[in-house]
Length: 299
Image 1: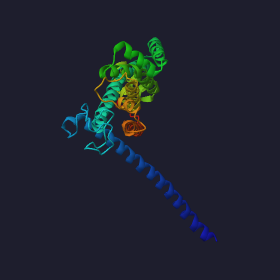
Image 2: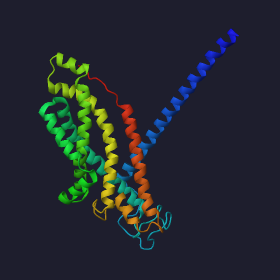
Image 3: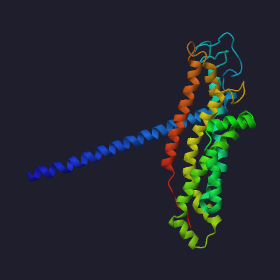
Image 4: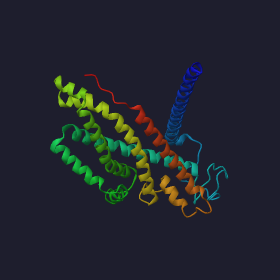
């Protein structure tokens, strides 16, 4: 009996360990696959937008009056046409280019402004930190969409104006994330050692703090790109986005709202494109969160 018990227990433990490892390996494989698919979708969307003039597709602003509201696959229109006969595939690609331009451009501006303010507030503290925090709290108190609508009244509409508005609205969020990350590193051992070796504040900030803050900021910025795309779509849906005849996913959904019962593809296709893009950005942000580890710079 003793011999049998000793012989069975190790086998059971080994099987259990193998099961846990298998589940962990499956989750890791699924995570890598979702990240690869997400990156491929975003890359394809960006490439199609950049190379659109070279693609054999109809002009997104030209109407085919013989195929108004045509279903996908009709008369050479792969994804059909909209309410005035414009090719849906062409408009989806141009709309994706607008969304990525607004998302990346607006968030880049937000990172430029917010990360600088967050670094200064987190590293220096004191009166400067309190002033920056108060300013960020005031800006964050306004609902984002309402603030964007108000800004569109003052600075106007158009692609550049939307990018500036989104950059200003999202900069406080970047500043708070950067400040929190900076505060977490200012008391770390490698920063204390750098001070003990006589390093100045600027050198510590550039050599020790910034390299460790970059990772969290990039991961958060990826999430903000998705937020910016939703904001641009909302403004375009309300008629405050890029002016016609430019294509935008929000504008396309607004155009298809009145024809949803008869031609649902006009509104569903841009909605699906936006959903897939937001999902891809979410998976990519998760991958970046795992990818960027805190690394101490060489002293």
